[in-house]
Length: 487
Image 1 (spheres, helix red, strand yellow):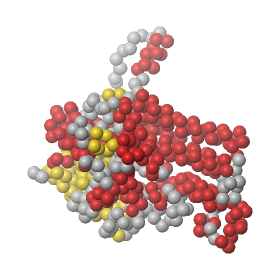
Image 2 (spheres, helix red, strand yellow):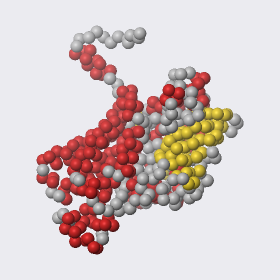
Image 3 (cartoon, helix red, strand yellow):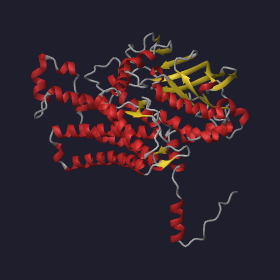
Image 4 (cartoon, one colour):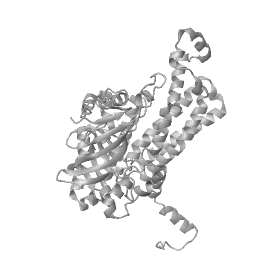
């Protein structure tokens, strides 16, 4: 059986990987306080697939009878896309929170590359074989597979032209074993994942093959490979009280600067190499599947905003006020706007060039932009509805102090809400909206898949506006369409 248990996942991380955080090298990542909570979450996700109440929703069967994670089976029908949505929602329901980098979203980038297999086969048949092999292997071995997109930002004028090879990941050697790469990438969850699909981001692929070729490579990197170093940012939840910070102490995902110091990538892990066309293609299509799972998580974040706002106004009886109902309605509009885009993206799904069923690209990308552009306003609405106690409430230890219990009972009891229960709700709201983790997540979401301008370019490039042009031509009695004039 291909499915891994949480225990097997934990054991897979003991591969000698170099992980650094808070001034130390980590010796046991599964027990380190910065990583243990999120590794526990991922372990739980693995174990869920074996439980009778979840098995049908979280697994799928390949043609040869192999049972794999539903998340890793490439979609070929609209029902498959619906099942992927059910998978994500089922997992998040059980976890009681939102996690972004857990593998089900990043596998979509491999499916995007699969769609280019015919063209890649023309360039080099090895590429298409390797892509097919790794998509199948990820599913059959239940690998925690992530992405590695983001480049360290230096002098952009040099980066775009490929002149600064010191920071951008590039090939420095080829030999009979594979390619040797040097450079760096940022990736969330890399330190506790098994492998990553590494690909180029910043470059001008029209600048010419001679200067760009060393950077135009995509490959699978083992996260425990010799020479690969994980330099991690500090956790924002490690030292916090779990009652006071119920989200950040459990769902903190750690971001990593992946430094490739002459790392050997075996030829069987190379997905394209010295191929500017392949590099440009993957940048244009990388999120055609992964944006679906990502936006599903934004929808769940919207649900938490709405639920937090509702419970806070209901406990104080404010739902009778029309002004409050109006703000709640705005939150509902936001939530349902994301839901509508996702639902329509499946209903209007399209068959890709590789024969997969991909969410309707225009509806998916506009849904992602809609979610991200509206999130700050919706978070602010939730703050208004929760009220000023979000910022001034004492911590749980203070509220539980017997010496002041009578004051807590007097000033924090509302109807059937005890001070303890009311405190829990306020702490959840604070961690969702006002904590360091909340601020971090707002920025992370904005750039997690691509910067805002690139998201808008995805909308522009995936909307077929010819129908609108033709409507105006007909209504305005214009001449038949002519070829574009170039200057």
